[in-house]
Image (cartoon, rainbow over all chains, first blue to last red; front, side, top):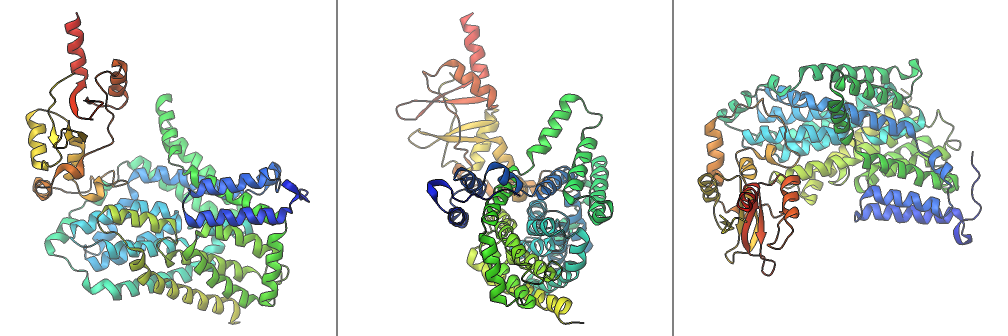
Amino acid sequence: MYETAQEVVLGLNPMWVSCAIFITTYALLISDIIHRTVVVMLGAGLMILTGVLNQQQAVAGVDFNTIALLTGMMIIVAITKQSGVFQYLAIWATKKVDAKPRGILLMLATVTAVLSALLDNVTTVLLIVPVTLLIVDKLELSPYPFLIAEIFASNIGGTATLIGDPPNILIGSAVGFSFMDFVRELGLVVIVIHTAMLVMLDFIWGRRLTTTEECREKVMAFEEKDAITDKRLLIQSLTVLAMVIAGFMLAEIIHLETGSIALFGATLLLLLHILGRSSKNQSKRVNGILDEVEWSTLAFFIGLFVLVHALEVNGLLAILGEGLVEFSGSDIQLTAFVTLWFSAIASAIIDNIPFVATMIPLLQSASTGLGGEEAMAPIWWALSLGACLGGNGSLIGATANVIVAGFAERAGYPIKFSRFLLIAIPIMLLSVMIATGYLYLRHFAGL
Amino acid sequence: MHSPPTRLYVDNTVREAIDLLIEHHMYNLPVVNRDEVFVGEISTRRLTGLLLPDSISMDMGLKHTGFMRETLKDLHQRLNNVSDQLISQYVDTDINVVYPDSPLMDALTLLYHNKYIRIPVLDPDNQQLVGGISFITLLRALEMEE
C-alpha cells in the first residue's frame, strides 16, 4: 500500500483536487468536444502532476488483466475476421429463413447477439452491418428495422458473458467473477430479454416487411461458402478462439487469469498466421494485425483506471460508499434494484465504461456495510445488467450504437436521435424490468 | 507541363465524365467550375464505386464479396441510375496541386508518394487550371533536353 499525500499542489486537500479533476474530466467526456482518450489521459496526467498520485500509485491502479483481455481479444478478432466467417454466418442465417424479411430481422439480430456475447459489440456490428445493408439492398427494403434490431441485440447479447461488453470485463476482473459465473448468472435472463425484444420488434415491423419473389431469389443466390476467403485461416482462428473460450470456462481450474489466456491465444494465432512466411512478409502481417488493435481504447482504459484510483486512494469513494450504505439501510435488495435502474439510466446518457469503472470501487468500499463480499453478488449482477442493457436507452448509450448510426447515414437512411428514442426507451424499460424480476426471483424471493 | 489540359466541368454528368475518360484513355481528370477555377478530380476508382452497392463502396464497407452473384445487367442498372447525375457530388476535392514555379522535385515526389498519374498545375493568382504534369510529360522534357 502506498502512502496517501496529505496535501498537494498549492497546499490543497488531495481529495478535493482529485474530485475537481474527476468531475471536469466527466464533464468533458459528456460534452464530447475532445476525444475521450485524450480527455481521460489528461485527467490521469493531472492527478500525477498535482501530486494527488505518484507514478507508482498510478501504475498500481491500472487493471492489467482487463488491458490484456481486451488486447488479446482485439488481436484474435482482427485475424479471425479476415477469414470471412462472420459474413458466412450472416448469409447462412439469411438463407435458413429463405430470405424472408421477417425471418431475416430475427435471424440477423440473433446472430448479432450470439457474436456480441463472444466478441466485443463494436467489432460485431462492424462485421454484421455491412452485410445486412447488402442483403436489405437486394430485398429493396429500408435497412432501418434491421439496423435497430442489431443495435439492441449487440447490447443485449454482450450482457451474457464476461467478454461480451467492457463493463463485464471490468466487473469480472475486479470482483473475480469467472466466465462461467457470467454465463450461469446472466445467460438465461439475456435469452429471455433478447426473445422479448424480438417479439416487440416483430410486432412493430414484422407484418410490414415484405419483398418480391425476384428480390428474394437474388439473396438466395448468394453462395455463403464463397464468403470464406481463407480456409486455413478459418480453421486456425476458430480453433484458437474455441481454445480461448474453453480456457475462460476453465480459468478457475487451471489457475489462470482471463487476460493471460486471451493474450496467449492471440500470440498463438499470430504465430500460426506468420508461420512459414518470409521475414519481410512476417513483419508485414504482424504489423498489419497490430495496427488493428484499438490502441486509443486501451489508452482510454488505462487513463480511466488512474483517474478512479485517485478517488479511491484519497477516500472519496469510501465516503460515497458509506453514503450508499446509509441510504439503503444496508438493504441488499434495495441496493441491487437502485444499482440496476441507476446504472441503466446513467448508461443511456453517458459512456458505461467510465460509469462502471467508478461504481466498482464505490461499491467495493460499501461492501462491508452491505454484508460482505458474498452478500454483494446480486449488486454486481445488477450493475452488469444495468450498465449493459442501459446502452440501448439512447443512440449515444453505447459505441456500437454510434457505429451503426454512422453506417445508416452513409447508406442514406440516417437514424434520428429522437426517432430512435421512441423505440429505445420502451426496449430499455422492458429489458430492465425483466432484469428486475429475474434478480428478485433468483436472489430475493427465497425460491 | 501538359497544356491545355483535358478537363471536366462540375455541371457535367456522370455519363459525360465516363465518355471523356474513355475517349482520352485517362484514369482521372481534373474538374473545374465555369470560371476555370480548379475544384478537384474525378477518378475511375470513384466511378467504379458507382457500379457497386453502397454496402461495398461506403467507408468501412464489405471488403470481400465473392459470395455475390452479380450479372452485367445488375451493374448496368446501377450505372443507369446515376448516369444523369452531376459529377459535382463525386469529385474528390482533397487533391495535391503544384504551380508553374513549384520546384520540379515537388511534382516528382507527389507523383511517387501519392500514386498520382498526373498532378494539376494551377495559376497561383486565381487558382485556375493551367495544365498538368505527369511522368510522361517529364520524360518528354528530358528527351527534349538531350
